[in-house]
Image (cartoon, rainbow, N blue to C red; front, side, top):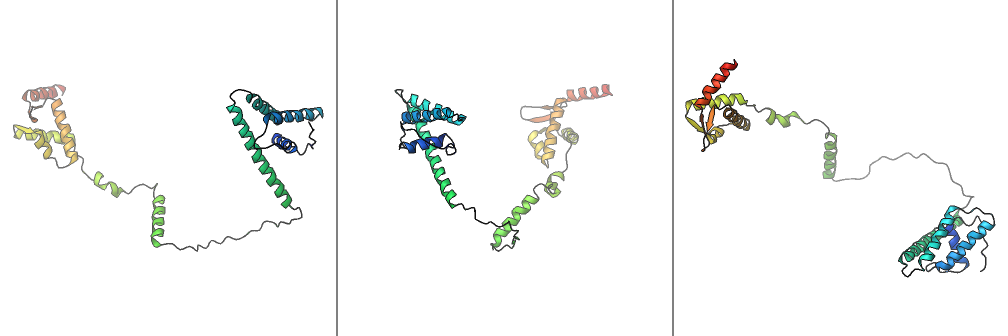
Length: 243
């Protein structure tokens, strides 16, 4: 096999060396005979060592890669070897394209060219575009909304909530007892219907629960409440003993 003569500075990496071998032996880059290429590549590595040239690790990595593809293709099923071969062909074609473009750029470069120093140019901040007034209005609303996004909300938003009187449970307890003293029994529906606000209805509900727990009122199956006489005496005696 004819030996390939090359200059060391020309070979910049393992892909560059493979392209030189393909060009020297006129191999088809789209259908590389891996076995032949592997033998040529290993021969060049051996020649580099004989010439006391330090072989970089990337060249040895490519050598092991070629050997692995070559041995894998000897197996009955070598789908993995075909995939690795396609990857290698793709890398070689991309590298060859980049190398050709680098040569064209090198031909265009001229060291006699002159480049002036950087100049400071004043910016023209004049806004020359025109927009519809609706677009400007939407932009203003969006900007104003972002500006006031983190500000505290106005107290007027909560006036309807804060200004409402809060009804205490104790006052509704007194109201329920007074009504039961006047009437023999009262239905829960009538009791809640007389509430003038949600706060008053909630306080009435809690008052009824409190009175039932203290056994001062009784609740029948028709949801009517009435005074619990026994509970009333027990509650009064308990209060007197506590005092």
